[in-house]
Image (cartoon, rainbow, N blue to C red; front, side):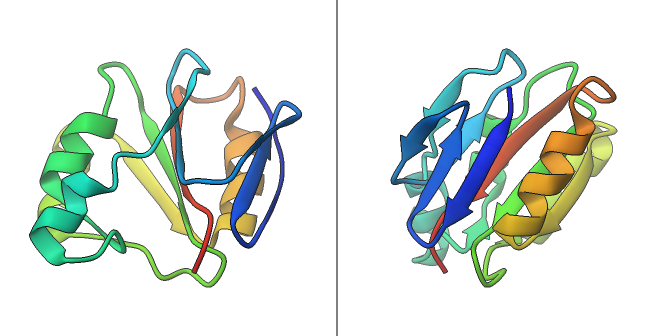
Length: 120
């Protein structure tokens, strides 16, 4: 699983172009991000809720890489941050272009999942 590139509004993974936010699971499967799990609490998908954190987390993962958007607008709620911390899951949160590099570097070194916001 390798993330090839991103630009505003899209991300390319293993040659496949996605024009929506994505979640890369431990298995390498790419699924559409369930933004509504956060939007219903905060009115925006720029704050990751506890409910979305519970959906994203997979038993056995030790790293979550969050692509916070091209300009880094996505944040974890306090509850989501505590959720990952209590499970021993390190969170790397940075603008999506940098998060792609971080995710690709974790391959083979960590049991990583990735959540990538492709716009702001």
